[in-house]
Length: 223
Image (tube, rainbow, N blue to C red; front, side, top):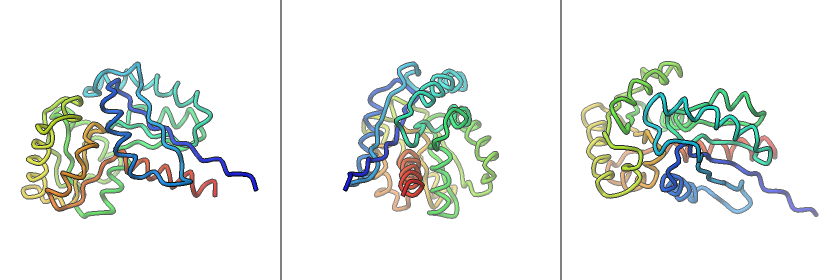
């Protein structure tokens, strides 16, 4: 009997920070299983070091589309940036499913709690996230969103980032009333388990959430 080819999922970090990509790959290693889809993590070389402004978002949209359109060997894509840059454009560029981590992280959080809190990297990100939640029609389920005021690179390393995330997470839980937390940046991936243990409520890594949805899509759509 011929061996079944394993499906392939491409997870794209749209910034050019290889440490962020490594953190994403480490977080996704926990959801890889025997005979399941292969998960490939790739850094977008054309991207800025961190995606922190609307200009950064717009700058990676066309490179992401070109990447997605050119990867015919991939069964599903994950855009690993919480702003979901180029999501709709990439969906137009391929017949394969494309998942954005913001959308998937929020939807997963809504299945785990009644009121979600979001840890943002910076204050200026929050307006953009609010607009997206409004478009999704789930703004009434938001307990609150609070910023770390760190860069994407700073969130990916060091105890300072985790300490700050714990401080903000406690505010979301105790002041805003969140019973589930979404980490609002792919660079936070390595801190999820420690943060969840300290807060004692579910903490969602949106890249894991999106990859799990991608696994479900390719496993069951091609069963």
